Structures are given as structure tokens and as C-alpha cells.
Image (cartoon, rainbow, N blue to C red; front, side, top):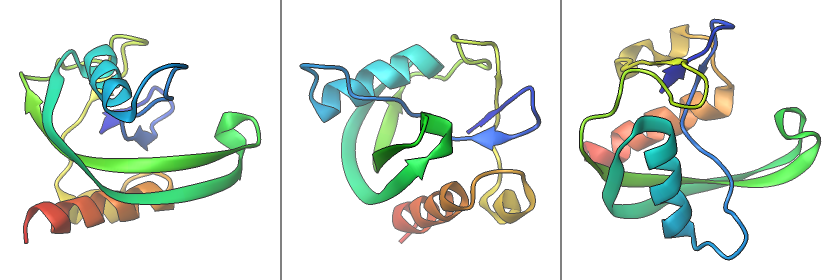
Length: 114
């Protein structure tokens, strides 16, 4: 997760560029945002956001992946200096974050700790 200057938590992500596969986009976004690669990536959940105000009213398909980081993530995002944060899953409900992201984080935790 990352922590923004607006005291809001988010999860890493981005768009698939033209001509890019989902796996290539995942690799690029992990490198751009955290300075690491990913390996053994497998999708585990998805949902659709209709008229997403964050994306200018676009409809977006959001995919979540389970993956192993190939390296140690840097402490700030390269794009804007926002801080990277490791949040215990027990504290997710108490932070300021979109509800669907909270649910995805808990789902990911449960998926990885079966």
C-alpha cells in the first residue's frame, strides 16, 4: 500500500498500455511504483468500477494479483514521493481507503494465508 499526502491509503496499480499484455503491465507498474519486479504472478480477484470518479467517469476492470516481489520495494513511490506503508491486515478497516480496496486487501490476505 502507499500513503498519500492527502492522508489517504491506496494500493499500487495502473493501466495496461497499448500493445502490452496484462503480465507486462504488472511488471512495468511494479517497477515504476516500487522499483521491483514480480514473479509467480497469478490473478485472484477482479471487479468492475462503473463511472469511476477517480478515472474521469470511465468504467474500469480492476484485477488483483498474488505475486512474489523480486527485490525490496523502495520506501517512496518514484512518481510523486508518496510513502510506501506496510499495514497489518487487522488495521485495514481503520484506515482511510476506498472500501473495495479494503475488501481486496483482506481477500488477498486470506487467499495467501489459506
